[in-house]
Structures are given as C-alpha cells and as structure tokens.
Length: 119
Image (cartoon, rainbow, N blue to C red; front, side):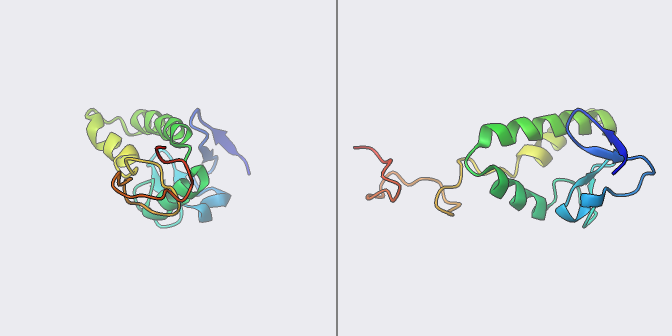
C-alpha cells in the first residue's frame, strides 16, 4: 500500500481512499472516521478488537490511543479536548478484563480463579 504513515501509526492513503486494511475498522484520516462502518473512530467494533489485541496491557493500549488522540486533535483542530478524550479513552473499562468478565473485581468474592487473590 502506498501512503504516508503519521506519528500515530495511521497510514493516510495517497489518493484519499480508505486503506487496504479498512476491514479491520482502521481510521481514515484526517476525518478520523472508520474506513469500514464510517462511524467516529474508534468505532464500537474497533474498540472490541483493541481490547482483545491488547488484553490486560492497558498501559500500551493507552499509549497507542494517546498517540491517536494527539494526531486526531491536530487533524480535527479541536479546541475543547474533552470530547476527543472521551472518544478515545472514555470507553475503556476501569480495570483490565480478566477471564472474559467486564465486571470490576469484587473484593467479597472468594476463590480467585487465577490464584492471584490476597493470601
């Protein structure tokens, strides 16, 4: 694929067309919409993909999303960063998912399946 890759790792198509890997719900810049479903990026399917790809490594996911946020703020010329911050970070669960559950850890539950609970 030809194009220019910006500092967030997003490739901009030289002819303005959606990237070849748009089936992965990749962002189309400078609009920051999804190349597959045209929703604001990250769209709901891409959010699920990102959670699955990064697993419990929320720090790296946050670094990636932060780079995307910085690029989007520059591209979209947004004065109020709150809406973009909510768009890029507001959907993240408060705690990493463990064992496929999206519920926060309940300290009253006994018998931690991973064996990493308090001794």
